[in-house]
Image (cartoon, helix red, strand yellow):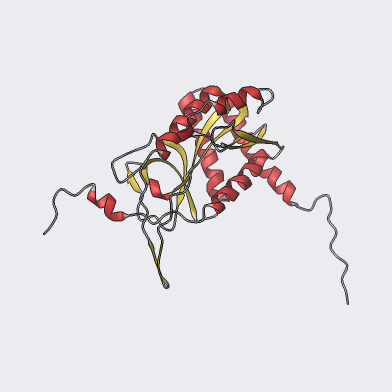
Length: 257
């Protein structure tokens, strides 16, 4: 006997309702924190914790989300990054020194700066931090498989982004925003971002041309940002195979002959 298909009701959960519920939760938490916490450093740390929690809960488990410094095998070290999205499965080490995390550059997929407001000053600061990660040296080795060695993977472009509660501009992604993005150093260019109360942006940088901006307004901007971010992470596949010996060489004084 054929059964009648289930019909939706106004109380039934839908993808749209779930995404909007997720969005409202973070927006409310960030708004309350800003309205009640007067100390700037405390407010910043609280906002970072909220964002990191959301990313940890909703990104695929192959990714790890940390507040961290990024290091390379030649002794380079980035500025402290609010949110580093890095490899969970294939990275051989993450150093934890007194609560300060140090992540190898090869394992990094994306770095995000967390701000209260989106404006030219905060974009400029985010650009400097993204650049401090992208300028680090990354190794890459051939990958052993059952079918033999696969060629070393070319290190991928590290996604750089900025997230905030809201934009200081009206409209949020108009000409002043475009000017702030266009004037940034190419090494630290921002690929995407989110103003929770306004929307999401993504940027492309054709060589020698004005950046191409796609801005999307949404009443579930947080959920939209997560989906756009996941799509970018998927496109990268896996991180390069890190050369552990290169890191070992940095702490070796003599060689046994």
